[in-house]
Amino acid sequence: DLEKTGAADALTEAERDFLHHRRLPESERQAMIWQLEDLWVLMWSLRHIDEFTWPAKMCNVDALHELVFNKSKDSRAFIEDANLRGAKSILDATQIVIAIHAVLRSASAAQEEVPENLNWKQPNRIVLVSNSALIGIVARRHHALNWLRGLGEWDTVDTPTVPEAVL
Image (cartoon, rainbow, N blue to C red):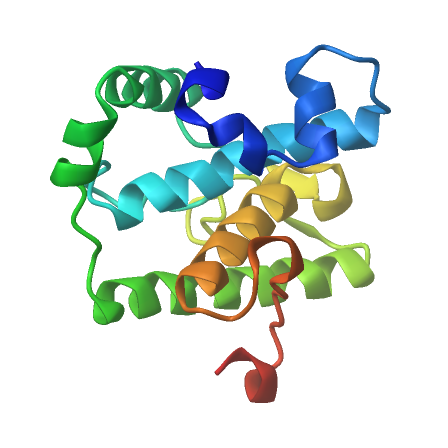
């Protein structure tokens, strides 16, 4: 329970509204759902998830829910089991995500289509990037990775994709 652990104090107003099922505009509800991608990256960075999967679809929400639910039962064990990945792993994941994010931003600005599975060699379906979940998935992963790299406070982390701004 968030109240018992004191975690409720760290929630933003929008997160509190979301958790209390208050009516939020669709865009705000979607923004809350996208934060599951942030959580997925954070769980990966702590080695609670083994593989940094290709961001062609939303993270496995059911598996993430089960993981968080099971880990939240014993916060001491969660902390003891956590082992932050090294800088190389985080930087490798960031490099991939930044490259994909740059492609998606460019395709969005040009109103272009991309493979739904982000596989240009074997696309499963071609979609207009603005009608795709890909940009939200990649943006949130980029956000979490940049936070892990110490590039700002959680609510103010930027996700630049131009070469001079990413380092």
